[in-house]
Length: 314
Image (cartoon, rainbow, N blue to C red; front, side, top):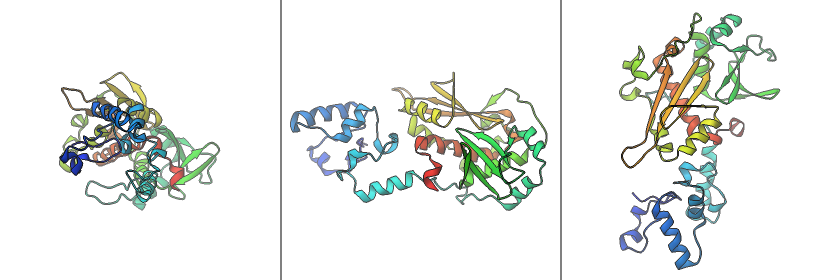
């Protein structure tokens, strides 16, 4: 399939069938450079979109560039103003979090009830979160989640993001659910075993089959040809680079739950590959279904990268 950097699929264009146009190809392809040279030779000018993609080493603007849609698209080519407005709007909001069966995720009231009954200091000791002393709710907690400071407010049954001395409520059912589960599941303090494993090494490994297999294809498709993009996005969400695979990062979505993402880029012999490793102790905090949801949350934040801005969607 010949999809150009701008997003046009040239395989469904009659001009290609007639031999009138060869298509541009992805921004990092040889075809793109040839097309740009032909434009300059024949037209005396070049496509601003294709030139930008080549200059910034981007295959596809819509998938790989955090600036899309930028000023290069304002002429109306190849997309209408309405389409670009839709793209801006939908890129600034969180996708709906779904269960494996396709139902929207909701946090049951009994989960918040259980947290409200927990002793604050016991929760802090078990999970390494801290009391949020500046909240109106005396039983509130705070912890670092990836690159964000989260404040949990059991009194109002919500989670907040701290910004300096202030904080604001966010609507993120996936993060809310995982946060409440993390704070309520553990019953006693457990040491790290310093043993990493894939899901196949977990006690509940049979869960992760079929519909419940970990979803990694979206991350692979986004980054297998853009390792620098993976580095940039992983650093933006608070990842710590580690010496594994071609590129690997350790993420800490919750204080005692490290998750490792290993990326092998695509080459002439092999397709790209993503592998996810967990500390074995993760099963002390999360069931298999929650681990599945946790991976989806990290995937989402990685793909959104710097476009993930909670304040812009309030």
